[in-house]
Image (cartoon, rainbow, N blue to C red; front, side):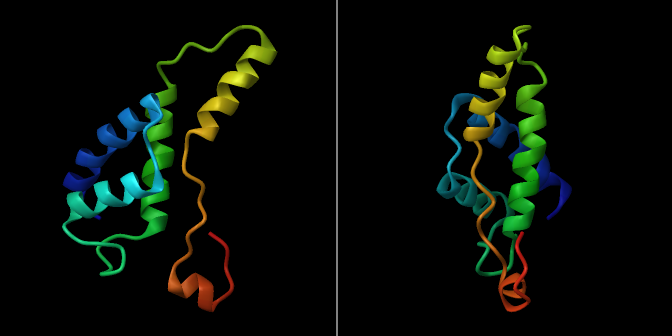
Length: 101
């Protein structure tokens, strides 16, 4: 994936994480549009998508003030983690080699 695609995708994914609108389908659509092809065509991989989500999560979380109370802070972090798509898709090579992402 090239730098212009990453520069396009990170703000979109960050926004979706902040608003709670990031779904696996939305993520796939954003990547497909940004790189001009689907994962099935080899234009991008789910590993790349999940790496982008992790980068966007850092951007989304860095400006959110965390509560000083540990229980409230844990609730905030848990809610943020729950808003991210799970890393459940494996490539054909991972399946063939019985590897988990």
